[in-house]
Image (cartoon, helix red, strand yellow):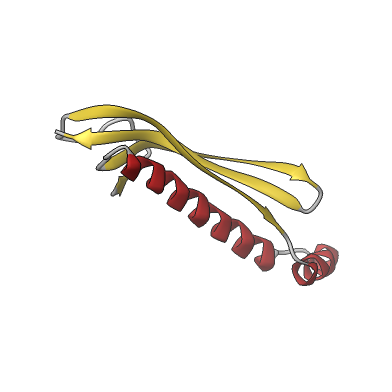
Length: 103
């Protein structure tokens, strides 16, 4: 499966199959939350949250890929990500794009 954030595949003719998406709501754990609170005192990257969001993006991509495969897609183009805070301590990550078949 190819993943592209452009609206075409260079040198290829494609058939659009439709929108595909993957979403996950991830919450932080108490250990990460405590360390994040400590980090805000001194500044710098909050690695626990970075790891949490990286994991969430991978889950969202995998779910999007599963939808694309069910449509018979060879690639997903025009991929975008969105994130939002649903409640204190939980974030939603959404991955979406256009499933296509290479002709």
